[in-house]
Length: 145
Image 1 (cartoon, rainbow, N blue to C red):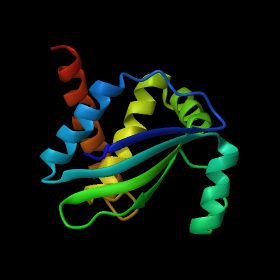
Image 2 (spheres, helix red, strand yellow; image 1 turned 90 degrees about the vertical axis):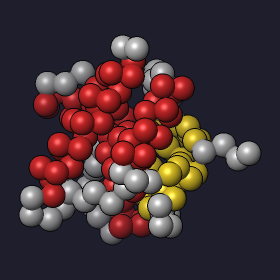
Image 3 (cartoon, rainbow, N blue to C red; image 1 turned 45 degrees about the vertical axis):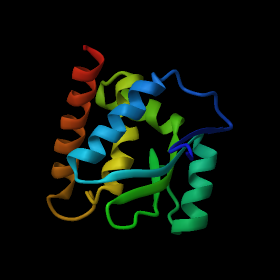
């Protein structure tokens, strides 16, 4: 059976995440949204790489914490998720969150996009934040078992 998750680093060290628990959590989040997991590649990178990807593929000239390339077909979610650990760290400092908490938020943010939740239109940011918070609570409960 093909592995669903790929955890890749480009120019950064692999973050210290409990990958077994994170993978179970992502699967549970997808199920809550009526989806099943297909191949997911998480590519952890730095700000230089994220802006390169943003410029090359999206014609955006700014830094971001995550870029999600969506290959979802029906209920089967799949994608490549580029996460800038530099921007995650900066955002954590700006919002007063721990780096680990902000990283988990960004990890699930990409999955929520693959599940069909957007955050660019009117009122969508609030929906995304609510879903992120619900997902983070799921992880806390899972880790406390």
